[in-house]
Image (cartoon, rainbow, N blue to C red; front, side, top):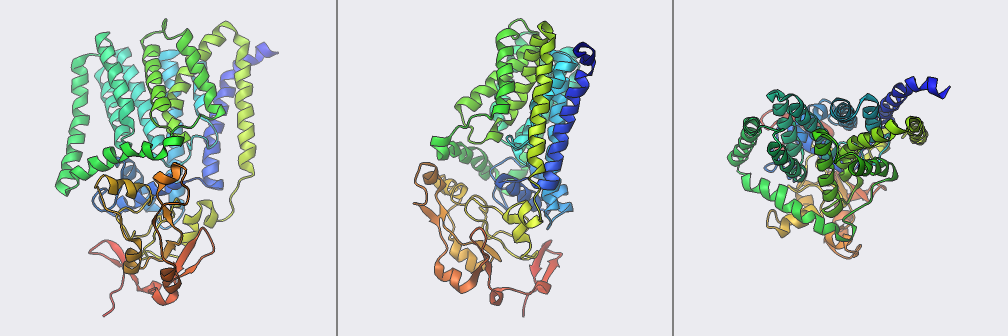
Length: 501
């Protein structure tokens, strides 16, 4: 009986993979998905959609490609939480693309179709431990890296230059999504030198294929120079970010979740049993895995989603380990089938009880705030709480006050602002009424002891009234303009309140 069912195993594992992707779509649509990072990048994409330039018109400390990819999706549904749904659905789709290329790397270069399906199944965790349904740079970066690795291996196999062109472009795109990819790219670059030495890569082809990414990055830098933010870009993306690990200090590393540990262990097994005697593809993937593992283990991993690429490359290599095991003991394959279906059942049941009712709660305070603002209003984000999706900001450094602005001031990039003066000047419709604490001190155990910004009770009493949620306050009616005074200014391409003579 068991023997006769073996022919269905690939279909069963594939069914789990499709179920995992489908459950992520379901979770986005019916139970919400998004944290502070998601909302930050939705807002940045919205600003880009309206023609604002990162580093010049609004503060950011990431490379900008993500916002330009997402801008049409956010713009199509602006002033609605459907915009957040749209970019999260985009993220799940890219998670599906990553899963597909993990399967293809195994099938085409490392093992076979079945082991490729198992590798894909290891990756597509149908739940939120990796935030793989949330709109974060890390998720998109992982997709670009995995696709880039696939085309690199394709070049090694066929020695045709077109796949190498694609490989370089996707790896470059990973960097332009987030500068965090630079460390991984250094590892891949080092492996590339070894591949050239082994005559698996041709140096001339590499130089030709590197030309386009270099030209694209040079054009990007020239644009920044023209806009007057060349130096700002480097200080924000590299110098500022180099100080962020110091903020976390005592909680600089978190451990992978249990489900993430499973492919990690099989990847380590593959290193021990298969890498030395493996082909050039196995050795290449193994070296990338080792490099990424060392980065995550010794540099900086404060949140689980930092593991996204390690999880992807570990799942890829885990397919090799599983192939080694089931080639010797074929019936063990049923253990993997049972594991995947158990995992899928657990998280399918979990999500079935987590359907969020109402947009005002689906994405936290951001949905709540949208009920009270129009397109002309300013909104001020709070301490560790972001909710401004589609409204103007009162300050250039608009997000993560108490953390990013503290570092920016420390490295002489941008001075700390006087929030109370900005509130009186712009009269934001929604503000946060609590203190903004120095996050560096918070993560070093001094919770609630070092406020870096605060709103005086006098100002709150004078201009605002509480909303009875998340310490939010709304501007009193006597300080507001009427909604019908909010009009579109074709010259500035912004919504602005009608000027009063």
